[in-house]
Length: 537
Image (cartoon, rainbow, N blue to C red):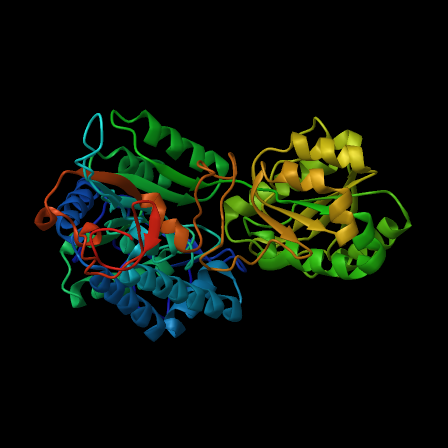
């Protein structure tokens, strides 16, 4: 086993305490060598799960009443502490994931940027969607009461770290940032692929809780298997919601656990997506080889281990398509080996590639250079089939890794039939001209019902963290297609509406007081305003 250059405890962080754990240690593995990394991480015990939930519930009663400025300062403190140990994080995460330093530095910056975005959202305060409908005592036949509403936090939220994003979708990632910004407390179930990275970031959050004078249970991070610790957390009666990024199998298990509790709770899972790409005739005539280069870069980015990887591409059979395919084959054949994140992902990729090679009507048209037997090395692979073979098959299923499927002979009617047959995905991409868009307007209308994000003349990998971003989609891409896990609108997932009827001003939250002491935007008698006063003129 390889030694770590960073001192790690290998223990869960429960509030301000360090857990003792019990059972066989879990070890991260270097994907380039297959060797285990020190230290081992001891799984949390049942008592420690209960303690984390108890502390989170107790802390929630205080934390939910903190101001937006206090939450903003907390999130900014976390970001600063993570930045102060970027070198340690990049070193350890590199050992655990084999992701290049530049990617990990970028992901660290993205993580801190997300934290600061949600700090701003919390500080500004209008996210609570405050609405005021004033009373009308003179209304006939019955007086109208004073009614006011706003969003409030749910309570303790369980966040599941993702294998493919050791920072941006893990301990202090988007789920944690949005939950904390909304006034919820958080228990993270760390991913077994990068426990050392998780501990480093977890300690930064733990120190920030203490430094900001917040109650102990605002944050905890637990180590252990998802089937034991994860399920135990989702079943715990004090937990009020969950956020997950991972496989469809694991996500569905946890989704069912959340729904089958005596008191069901919301569970936001991002689970599976193959992200269709439609190449329209005008685009291929104009830039076939450029599209091929962009597609190759997109489906091999991060060794194809992005939830937004374009895994199936639909195009017509013509001379321009031949030029596109020829260029894509050349790029795939020149690809050097990649390293996948974990043994399980590597094994699953090998099995899926073998099954696709054996699939009737599918041809393996290009593969990358031969791989070594060291670690979790894998080749890029390009497959091809026809539209008729694709329809009614299981070829839509996601393969996590550097591969994609070309679907040829797709004329306009076949493209529309395929689009109608698709299950839910995170994204759909269209390459075309303005003339193509006019001709295929009904394709866009169909895809609006199938995905959360439509991309035009671009590629779906790379999700900007903005106010308008939607990273979600209909089932099975997520458990709830009405939400997003990236961007400022993610804050709405871990909240619920509460209405106050007939309350005196003194008893109302500041967000709903007529004087608007926080200066936030509100809907008052049907009109948006940030002005104080009892009524909108």
